Image 1 (cartoon, chains in turn cyan, orange):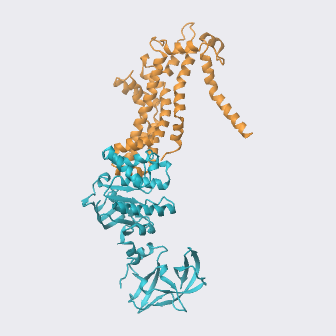
Image 2 (image 1 turned 90 degrees about the vertical axis):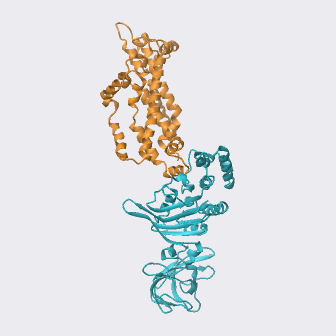
Image 3 (image 1 turned 90 degrees about the horizontal axis):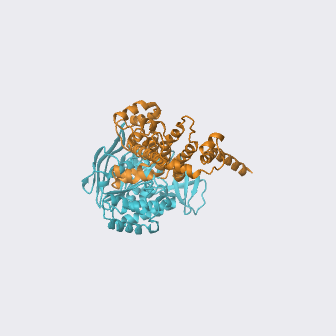
Length: 350
Length: 278
């Protein structure tokens, strides 16, 4: 077990492509960090640099206080779980798990003990002699996890390990990974593009965009205080509504409508207003602003109402109890409004 | 109805392909004089045991030193040496080309590939000269080594290695497998269907070599079956009738091992050339 430090790490490919731009992350021992971002944001590249599968152009990565820039992947004391599992197709489940230990010259008895333990933990006992091709996707994923566990590494690196599974399995495997990591207490770095996976798994989230860190924080912190319009739009489903507004005094103007807000100081002038779909309410007796319903997505307990207010598209989460007319009025919760700079997209803290 | 037509077509195909083989076998069971008078036979002649015994164990040839069995052995050495050598060499070459980034890797690949345009027949003189200077005439090494470089094999293995997912290499690297271990533990077992397929092709190719052994060996103890057949028919001296029966028997014997190899390896052969097990 170890902490991981990523200091000013950059990756530049030939042709001046900056995949990762001077990223700094301090990962504490035993922490579960999730790197999340859209495809092409550099999250996998960053993970692969820590694994040693890509060279680090500049900056340093250290595992357990030791700089590992020039260290071979096998000597970094890490284990990696790949998106397509990368199991050795010609080896049995047992051999797949034992291979890394065997290469390290671990005594046979110990290999056996460790594999048996991992197999019990992952409930793979009946499949020890099977080849990967005779396993289901979820089982293969577990074997890949087992291969990482038996090594007892300083850190686990996960590269979108659940992307190839169907939705239901993904949810249950997500839970298993979380539990396993809690039980083993191994520092983990997990890459995903799925913000829900990121929210549910992470002790802390690292939101990446175009090779740069947009925000680092606990899932709730990132959710409630997104640092930029990018984070606001990326974390949370359905995504936060972002509206260009102009503020004078306590009045927020957008399109030809205004919202009056009390009990809060507002940033004056042009800015981007962010409001989560669940923070919009049906307004009583003609207050609030006018909203035209375009279509409704029923989710069972709730419904997603898509529509627009003065030409601005908005999504609202409403209870599905009430019947909705086409034109309704909505109100906002003042303390739930987020403001971002119109120029930089960064959060404006009042 | 369609099923019967399908079967009819297949049966015609079988008869067409097998006919000459059956005729050769039947003819080989008659004695030479009978064949000389009546030509090819389609009936059982009754001299099976003695002809084949004579072909296999009796010393013959120009010097009277070489038996059919010895020729069979030579053919096997040539066929297996060929197949194994070509596979080892082309696998290593393909491994180098696919997994190691070295200067002009692509150039080297295409250089290997263009040797397809230079079959043995084109480079007989220089090849012979090299072997002769190295004093490898009349040796097994001289028979086998000059033909080992295989562009076809290298190309097949290159394509196969390229289709192996990169993650396997990465997983192996993290698991502490160096280049050698990765090759032996991962790539070679994954390639086994491919190896079997190429083994079949190369074995048959080596077994049927005629021109090169004829040039490289003058010592009859290096004769292969394919050359032996020709040798029997060469004794057309005076009123002596060539041992047609023996020639046919040798031909039948020469056919057997390649057929066996194909039959034994056929399921791997098809898998190796059509599907990939990844």
